[in-house]
Image 1: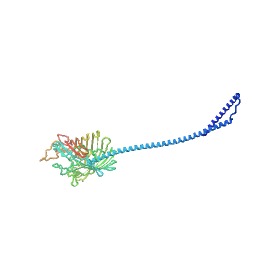
Image 2 (image 1 turned 45 degrees about the vertical axis):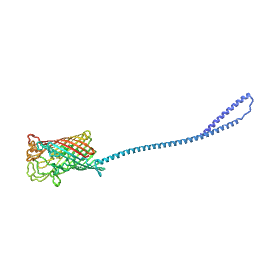
Image 3 (image 1 turned 90 degrees about the horizontal axis):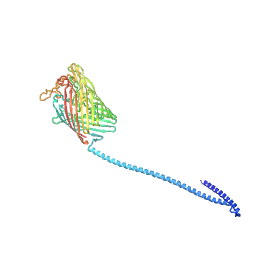
Image 4 (image 1 turned 90 degrees about the vertical axis):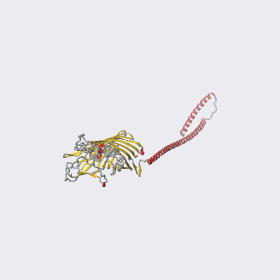
Length: 612
């Protein structure tokens, strides 16, 4: 750039020199011409060369001055560039410093925000911790003062389900029963007992329940023991001290895995009994009655068993059970006696000397499934039973005993089976109104009905014949408040006729040839000194078999005081109307062709204190 400036300056100076020279020469010529014409010739000045030299010197000075100025300007420009570069570097450094400071500020601000958040979290945690400590302290104090369960090592112990009862029963027709009604003992009309009412007050249904639960990572162990005083020893009576023996109701253990498998064994409710949660022990649903025999048509058993079940997604459940068997005494008319199926209890066997025990061939087998699809609880199950007796030759062969006197004693077996099911579900709200229906139909399943009418009868050759029958129960429950329950039940147990003709004699259950002529007449052969003649619940000459027992029940339960962890005081009243029908037989002009029957009205009351 410097060389270009010098060249430009030289060009300008040269051009100026030429122009000056031309002008000077022209003016001189004109002046000379003009002077020559008017004046004499003047003295000569500096020569052209001198002038040129002078101008050259002058221009050279100017050029040198310009060069010096240009050099100065160039130096100043370089200094300005350097200053600009320095300023730019300083600006970059300042910007970097500013960015660094902004980053530091941002980081500080973030650190402050984090610190503020940490402080807030710390304050919240302190408040939560204080609340937790307060809650835990309250819970600990509550657990110490009012424990829901007792902790023993790794298990929890609870007495929930225990209660103390003060109960009464009044029956229009006497049955000779306590707070539990013998359904097949409902007196027939016109019997001696039907002419007398009965009243009993009892505390024997008071119950003590004890549960132990131990939870493991993959399964839960449960043990349960339940007892009451609804049994009688050989010295039990009501003469002065109403002392009765302790009764074993339930004693079982259970192991339930987190994957849904459930294994249990011990004495408890039969798998045939309805449950409310899958097939789990301890969730059985019983009729809401004061009567300890529950309700006609209720399907149940409480016996030793081993069961296993599987939960498939909390909606489908499948289980099987092996249960202690017992065959009820063969029943019927004109049946043979040349057999043995069991015996009364023996002292050495620890059985009741006044009760019969069958020699069971196999246990009872029950398979059951339950479904909880979203509305209600549904069940379907099957029962298999196997009976056996040993048959001996008849002392005298007749229509009622046809085994030849020369026959060899032998065993006879008979298989029986039944199918049952039911459902229970809410109609209004979760539990405001609940309906249910359940039942069992089949052969030889009488003992699973609450009336325990009969299981089997006998043929003339003493071969066992299981009797067809069914049990059914419908329920309606209303719970307008958590402390009030109103219930209505209707159910019954029924048996078919089951007899054969041996010659001209009918042998079996519900024969049409049975003498029924005295069913409508009150017996008068009571003997002397008030001794009874025959069974007081059945008139003389009225030997038909029970056809069915039906019961209509209405009642309520009211929590007078529900003190939560301090227990509750509960009061209830139950009304029951029974009808016991007998298969029709031969005779009875006032009731031709129809069996005798017994009607009974009963009122129960209960006042109970339940442990929390």
